[in-house]
Image (tube, rainbow, N blue to C red; front, side, top):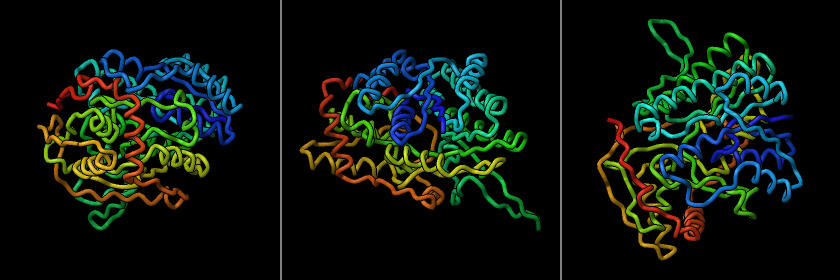
Length: 382
């Protein structure tokens, strides 16, 4: 099978490319280096240097004897997208190619405009290209648990049965995002559901929680193959940020009361979830939704886990509850269902002290690269 990975330079895109290449799939990656450009423009580059895609692919081929094909271009450009799909005719399209940051989307009008046009434009072009050139292909789209918000009822796995005035119907679970980025992901889901109904597309939408970690089975033997490890407020995920703050002696930035609860997963589980979705495709004309996470934690619980892991390594970790720059509930009910991927065979990697200690030991090697001004910008939702 030929797999096209849109956003193949990203934190998740590049590890996915290596995993599927190693498994014997014919892998094609496409990217326009948007995340690198935004990080450079905002002065929030990752903690370690990361080779460009040409170099990464050459390193991977040298180590694995497996090839990955590369296209550099903007998936908002229809002429480029059409040429890409005609040349590659993928059986599966894995769609990571979006501006991935909630704080960046709330930075200013220009960032909001970029987020809307990039995320919705790329999703639409992938849909149109699939219909025109590869109508039987399986689209795997990385959504986000943030689409659901924090409702005061259980969060079902994508769909909910509603009984109303004696009648019953199945609907997409109500969405109420807490950032513009998450709102564009809701719009992605709506676009996909519309064209599944209109054109009979085959789609898996993965509602993913925040990801942590850096090591995968494919990159542990050569640091040049590691993904981005961002620790800034804009592009760093919360646990990765906390680990760098701990090593750098910067108090952990817990927003408000710290009761915000979300579903988290190890980067290895992201790759396994995507692979399971690829190996077990939905039917044509089906929008299948999985809630993709393995454990739920509050921000306070994450901070305590990082403090415990630091203690094991002789690192004193302090916590600072700061005014919350976001508009979100700091104490709330949170009970999302997540059985679909487990039923397909997912074997989770849980967040242990050993896992956090391994992350900290990695960051210690790059401690001199930590720049405090990148950690917290106080990007405000209001």
